Each structure stands twice: as structure tokens, then as C-alpha cells.
Length: 472
Image (cartoon, rainbow, N blue to C red; front, top):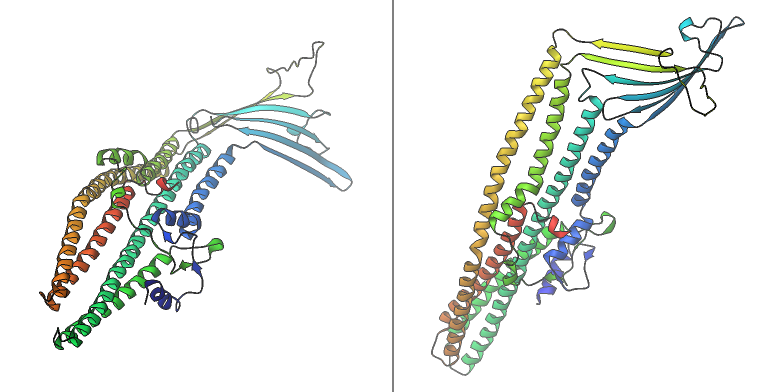
């Protein structure tokens, strides 16, 4: 039974919709593209980034110009108590100063005298300036700074989620890769044992071998058949795990078609284009999403600390409004307002005497900031060590692969030589079976070492925070 048929029979019981592509092989890079395009976790990561942008847009909205109007009219018992119209246009700024313009028109027998306006109404233009609290920062500017920091945090979190997702994909892909080609080697060994059993039976018929040799050949076939079944089960399970990452359009789950196999590894290319550890460390210290996240978190905590510290100052605000009945236009079409005669000035002062709430909030903000700074220091140290450890593991892979490849070559020589001796009647069935088992084991071990090297490369890029960015 061929490998494709074996997988098809077992997987048909589990799946109804398959994933396939024009190429019969699937590389890890192409799988990354499929995952980033359709995987729900990748879509959720995109939502995280969009949420940060939406929060930043909302915070910037606190500085949007505002236009409002209010009209009130009261009549009772045949008397016009008042008619009042007030329309305002306000421009908040990021300096904490608010500019506004207004038009007011009031009339009525019972109108409060201070609200009287000329017949044509009253035009006002003014400014509101914080002197103490709110001069350097205020609630709106604090919200904007925090929103910017949260947007950075969400973007970093998005990259980290994709980094972790792709490492999980790589792990499952190389497990599938290993199980696929390990099954091929076991399947090949099983077919060789079958051929040898038929060869032994022919030799027995010619009287060249004893009948007991057919029993030994049959036992070898049975043992390899058991290994083949187990290897097939492992392959199907690995295919199932990898299929968890395969999604089609419209969030429809799919599975790997039996026609698709892993793209064979070029072991030489695994070790190409990897920066040295110190360069990776320096890149990670600047761009790693975890460190970017904590630096943005520190910005958020610091903005909150500055705002809480500002609340310890007296709340002192000056409002000045210039009043004008009508715009007097001279012969040169210029406006001549009288700022000294027509104005409205206000002064607001507020200051809690004990400041217990403000001092408590400030202390809490400082503690949160210190906690974030300690976390950044710890994460930085762990990150540096993780990159160096991953690089150390990866740097030893070429030598291990070369030694394992030499073992395979040597076992090939031993098996082939023993096979010739067996055909010439100079060796026994037991010895050639031992040689062939060792060959198959060494082949599978070489596949395993190749997979470990390829996965170590992905882990190294992941530890530096570069796995997802390199796929864009």
C-alpha cells in the first residue's frame, strides 16, 4: 500500500473538506502565508491593533472643535417671561488653552437683568487659560498620551501574538515533516523485508537455505509491519495537528490533502542568512515586541503619574471674553473693537486642603510606574539570555548533522556489503536484518536532526521577535 493511499484511508474517516494547492509540496514559508491570511488568531491580532487605533482616535476627539446652541422661551399668563438664544463655538487645544466664540440674544419682561443683550444680540470671543493645575497636563492631554501608549502596546501585542502563532505553526509543521519522512523510511524498510522474504523462500525451494530462515524472515516482516502501522498513526496525528492551522476563506476549517507532502529540506540553506547573536540581541533590544510593549506601558504609567502630580497644584483658571454689540466698520473696512470697555472676566480657584486623595493617587501611580520599569528590566535580561541560548543550540547543529549524515552513509555501506555477502551465501539473514535496522534508525535520526536544526532556526528568529516581521 502506498503512503498516499494509507493516509487517505485513515484521514477519510475524519474530514469532509480538504486543503490543496497546485504544488504537491508544502513549504513552511507558504504555510506561514496561508496562516497569516486566514487563521482566526491572526485575524484577532489584527483586531487588537485596530482597537488601539480606535482608542487613539477617540482620545484625539477630545480636541475636536465643538458647536452648540441653546434656545429657551417662556410665556405664562399672557406674559412673555423671556426668550434666550445662546450659540457657541469652542476650540480646545493641546496647550490646555480653550478658545471660544459665542452669539447671545435675550429678551423678555422677566429676564434676569444680567442677561440683557442689545436688540441685535451680543457677540463674544474669549479664551480660557489654566494657570496652576492643567497648565502642563490635564485630563484630555493625559488621555491622549495614554491612548498613544496603548496603541503602541496593542501593536506590539499584535506582533507578539503572530510571533507565537508562527512558532506553534513551525513546531507542528516540522513534526508533520518528521512523521511523513520517517514513515517513508519505515515503509521502505517494510517493503525490503517483504522482498527479502520472497528471496528467502526461493532460496529454500532451491535448497540453498534452511526452512527455518523463512520463519526469521517472516518475523522481520511482521515486526516492520507493526512499526509501519504505528508510524502511520503518528503521521495521521501529526497531520491532524497541523490541520488546526489550515483555514480557508470565510473562516472555514480545512485539512491537508493526502496529495500534499512537506517540501524536502535543503540542510545547507538552514544555516544561511542568520545574524550573529550579538546583532540579534541589539536588534531585539530595539524592536522586540515584548520590550516595545513594556516601554509603551512605562509611557502610559508615566503619563498617569504626571497627571496625578499635576492634581496637587491649585486649580486656578482665568477666563476672558471680549463683548461686542455690533462690528463697527470704518471707511477702511477694518473692525474697531473696544477691548477695554466691553469684556467679561472670570477667575476660578479650587484647592483641597489635605490632598489625601491626590497624594494617594500619585503614590499609587508611582508604584505602578516602578513595577513596569522592574518588569522591563527583567524581560530585557531574560530576552538576552534566551537569544544567546537559542543561538548556542543552533550553532552546534551543522556539526551534529554532518556526523549523522556520515553515520547514514556508513550504515549504507555496511548494509549493502552485507547484502552482497548474503546473496553469495557468506552471511546470515540475522546479520543483514540487524544492519538494515541500524540503517533505517540512522536515516530517521538524520531526519530528526534536520528537523531540529530547521526548528532551532525558527526558534532563534522567534526569540529575537523577528519571526512574523520576516514573513511580510
